[in-house]
Amino acid sequence: MTQNDPLASIVIVTKDRRDEALRAVESAVAQKPSVEVLLVDDGSSDGTAAAVRAAFPTVRVERFETSAGYIVRRNAAAGMTDAAVLVSIDDDAEFASDQDVARTVAELGDPVVGAVAMPYVDLGMDTAVHQRAPDGDRPYVTHGFRGTAYAVRRELFARLGGFREHFFHQAEEPDFCVRLLAAGSVVRLGRAEPIQHHVSLKRDVERMWFYGCRNEILFAWHNVPLPYLPARIARVAAHSVWLGIGVRRPGLFARGVWAGLRACYRAERRPVSRRAYRLYHELRKREAVPLDEVRVRLIGSEGTS
Image 1 (cartoon, helix red, strand yellow):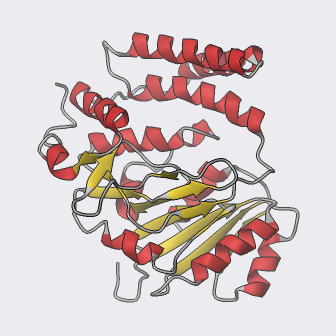
Image 2 (cartoon, helix red, strand yellow):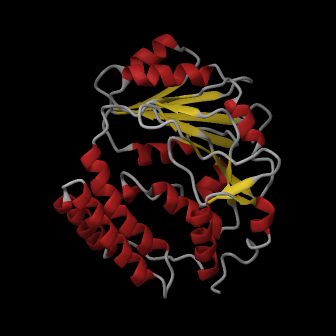
């Protein structure tokens, strides 16, 4: 990174959500000190790119004529900037404070911290603040982050290959984060003001259900070491069907599981070490663990033991 490179780049991937994207960009432009704002238009047909260019001339807008999905576009965005840190929010989200990015970048100060799970609230669904450290006296880590609110070291993101693009939709974050942990880095829980996630009404819930089931199977195939793999796949399959029964769509959920099993035949298998997987599982169960407690367990995490 040169002296003129931005410290952070806020990446917003959007498609056919012009009004939501304008709101998200407005909150990004307001960050202090100012950072690069990169809007990636994934083939919108509602004039999103033109509207953002007109309203915010300083924002970098990259428009694609066809849609490839937000996972592909977030990976591409990492190659469009020289910023040290990538900060990502969904196009239906907005920063609550003009200090959110500055505070989050500061939380990456420890070299072992590879990413920050930024606090957020799902407006209209609940009032709970997700991904926030329990107190500010010491750093806490967790198993992963949600795509609507995270920051990651760009160089580390690129070195790990970014998100697996054949996931297409859903579950790419835990897949990346378990690989990040296996590489000796952690996801820190943030303390910035919670990002306001407005949960767009344009979301395709059935597509989310289908790919959620499919990609949980793929996550296991890619990452879970033996002897844990068979039990993990069995639990995922059973739980998915149970959830499907609960929403009266067992067929949809079962098809998602079957699609995941079929996709395994074409997908590479590079499981993390048993030590890394056990640590990931523990972090997922406990949700917030002091960094000092985890730091000593990162040594040798990429080994086979």
